[in-house]
Image (tube, rainbow, N blue to C red; front, top):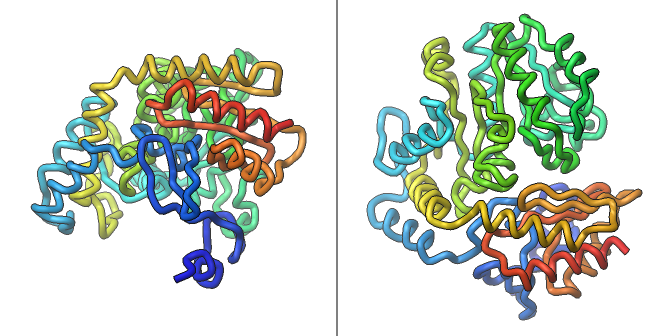
Length: 392
């Protein structure tokens, strides 16, 4: 059976036209992907930032096997089970947000956050900042960057919200004044990605922006939503992006690394006060609280607690800063970015990276990496070399 031929005939991959070139993976272990032709590639992307512990981890594998012997799934309407309850308890303890709604993807968790804000306040307008990305569903698209975002094709169908300018990398009093003008009491919520803007441009911004947003929203009766889907669980060097600013939002979205890249799972958390204003939340995914996903999420959090992730992330950042110096680059935590003057040729960049034994997935003008936390210095150096060669 020619899998690649069948793929070209039938499969539609993300952000690509049908028939776009893809590479068949037949196995994955540690930080390496094994292709059907026998090549091994160091994964510099952690499978879109999710596989923080690497692949085929025995503890995560065992968590799934053990849960499978009990049940793979049960509806969450009117029923509950231990893995989901334990996970909710742990997330509440980690974040200080007492109520946890378990969703099945990051985009859905943002939709749930928006619904929470609208039900809690009785208002429908949101504010955000330019350069953001919050997902591919319609509510999430409406708070993505309206000009440079990947969802401009649907602009006519999206609700119109309020956008501040790009958040600055350094303290900027004029920008903080702009936020003061835009955060008005008629808003339901302000939604931002804390500190790092992900798929909207991999930008890093000053924590003072978050602190000012927290002050303004609290003073004016507006909710603050932190989209921590990409920044949660240590990627930026702190457990959550909000920790850089020392703030707690009213609502938080989590996903991606929540299960260590094993299964799709997300969560929307809120304070008990917000939950009391909502009562019945009008949302209910079929696979909400899936036992397999919540079991492996608990195992992934166990690993995160046990491993020296802060030191691992710090060392990754040091290697990235050293290796990418002299280019238009930026590094935060275990995130390294080279910004090119023009949009990159994705196929060309990937060909060069694969020649170096590395898998990268660039977009726009960016060649970047978010490797697994346990990557060795040798393997990370290969990722850096691939980035440098691809940017030459």
